[in-house]
Image (cartoon, rainbow, N blue to C red; front, side, top):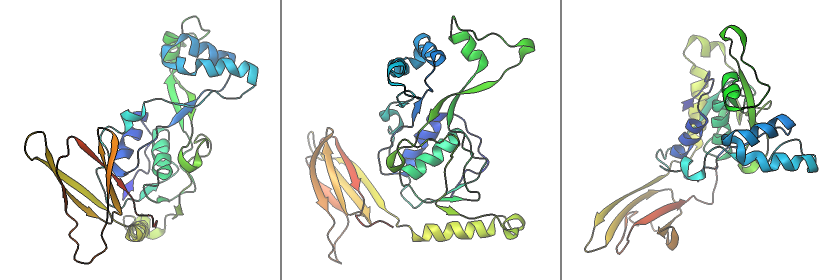
Length: 281
């Protein structure tokens, strides 16, 4: 059980990076977009970090689009550099105080079908935006009308809104938040007995999930050869890739005496990818 209640957010890259540890699927980075105004167009023209959005903001003058194209802050390889680490079932517990990067983490958890989202309230905080400080805007956006605030006063502003991916592609996180798959409002027993009812509900959700296993070891086997020993559990098939290209597939045998360990030789620098069972919980 992963409990993120009360998490007010932080770094977007951290929220996106953590998802890969929990999912066999390749993580899609969160796309962000600007509202289309002369000011945001000027900002994207001046500040190098925002110039990828410049072309679509300029096009909005002709198309009348309210928002720019949605683009990720980080490349896809940056949020998939480690891969799947924890292969057991997971449930995510949220509340209305999950905000900003935590909103995006919860959205990514749900969008990549990592597990059920169990909420003690009907939505997360609905603050899915990229924020910057007033001082950062003033110093980076040269030639703008942004002026220094008096007496050291500072504030932050939401600059780009984030969108969902997967089956909810294009849905904004801002103002909507993440609606849990299961709503479990806190009870008196939760307050007095350390979340007893909430834990019981989370445990029941975990019990319905199918644990899976995919582990392998690689050892030398002669000149320029490797031997892979693969152990699987509840996996329908294994696809073998060599240098990023599909090489072969091995399907699970259903014989009761079948040994799940398989060995391959003549495997230079192989990468394994797992396909889940067609059956879904």
